[in-house]
Amino acid sequence: MLSYNRSAQIGVAHNVGGRFAPPTLYASGKPAPRAVALADVDRDGKLDTLVLNVPSSTNAGDPEVDHGSVSVYRGAGDGTLGAPVSYATGGLALDFEVADLDGDDWPDVATAAFDGEGVAVLRGDGHGALLPRVITPVGTRMATLTAGDLDHDGDLDLVTGSFDNIWVFHNDGDAGFAVEGPYVIRNEELAVADATRDGVLDLVVAAAPSRIVPQEAGHLVAPVPVAVGGERVELADFDGDGRLDAVTGFDGVSLLRGRAGGSFAPPQSLAFSPQTKFESAVGDVDGDGHPDLVYGGGTALLTLRHNLGDGTFGPPVILPTESLDFNAAPALGDLDGDGDLDLAVAIGFRFPGSLQVYWNDGHGNFTLGPRMVTGGDSRTPAIARVTTLTGRPDILVPNWFDGTITVFQGHPDRTFSRFATLAAPAFAKTVVVRDVTQDGRADLVTAGPGPLFGIDFRVRIYPGTDHGLGAAIDLPAGTFPSTVVVTDLDSDGRPDIVVGGSHIAVHRALPGRWLRRPRPVRRGARRWPRGRRPRRRSPAGPGERRAHRAADRRAQPLPDTVAARRQGSHAAHGAAEMARKLGTAPDAAVGPRRLSHSP
Image 1: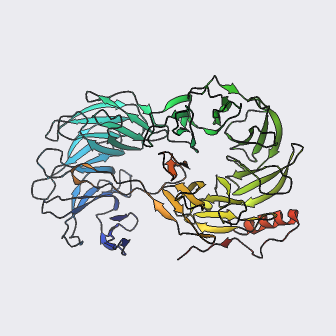
Image 2: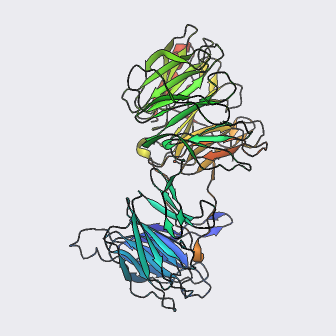
Image 3: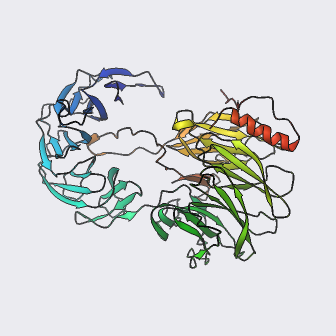
């Protein structure tokens, strides 16, 4: 089922052998469809379609503003729909639920009204029609709604949100509601699930940050932040139990200990800073055999935490800095060839940005090294050898605002020089160096959503040559690209490209330098009460960040994926700039080449 807001239509796309046929379009109720649900409203054994329609105007003087409605299309059983019958919901109902609220086994409809009325319930009349709405007032603007038996009394309660507050509507069993709230919890989407595994439904709140709100005896208690935000996820065995743990964070840095079977324990806070995205790097900086943690982000200063060996950490060590380096994104690597991990830190949200190098004395004590100018709003750097001339690793910095990657060449005397500026897809924020073309040379891989977050989602590869990097190759990303991981997912000895964003897309490597056309890996289906099907949500935009990592988390030979939310002639110019410095000529291409996928 599809809804087309601008053209006031809905569409039915039939599944034919695993492929969807072009949709059959039906006119929707005026003025614009917002959401679609499926339920058997007349109990004839055939699914019907319910469409929530909202006004196109919020002007109180506009006669259309009170014309919000739910339209019911009776299903014929052959995939076609009958003419819609519409029922008034009141102005600007932004969300709805279809479920049996009064216990008569007929579907009812509940809507969340943004115009200050509260929650409206349209009960099923027992013959497939809906009765006039009955409003339970709250006196504020409601934007989201979900249903579930929160108090374990056998009937469905409602939970609704108004961005900064949440109300619980306790059902008396006959669609009469007692309102509890408000709970001051910021929210954008709501769902109910037994998140605490105690047999009682909890409230799951999507926002920045996301939270789980447990309940006891039918009442919500203090919300627990869910540490799945942030730009990155880092995996390592911090507590030495042989299972990979995860570090990630929004509102701080949290450790999620790995459990048998591949799941994670609840997050343990290592640092707390409200509304702050943290970037982290993991590695053994003091040579004791345990992975340590370096993190920064927002207004938090760059911090080192030494691992004590059991998954606990020593006190925070604030690293020295020449200025207040906020929005720091760290990376660890041996930059000077002395066998210990040094630190390269990109400073974001500056125009231009900068890169700060720290030297490690081998015991986890860092001193300031050189500082270089980068592009606008620099993100987490990569440390790898791509220029091949000096025998020292280089540092590659993605610049989100500029749509470029700055390459700094490392030298034996602990200095760095700007070697080249390469074009990346617009708003790329991840760079990976791996041999994805299967020729024994390291390639550069990045991905971005394109100009103005358009639909030209691209993975860009700069293939390695004997003297550096060649001209760019572009591939379709297969999803809104946020991060990129290169790993051998199927253990065939060839590196695959995994792109994370609105969902995960996998470019599997094939023999002969081929990559299979990207295949999306979506989240599993969710069972909803009373036959309710989940509505399709729009794909993740720039505000929804997904981080992911790939590793073997279940003691098997196949790696798992752990998911947390400018192009054109510049590409040829960047490759040409690198080629001139190397004294070689790039491939004769004016713009980025495109590597064909296998049929």
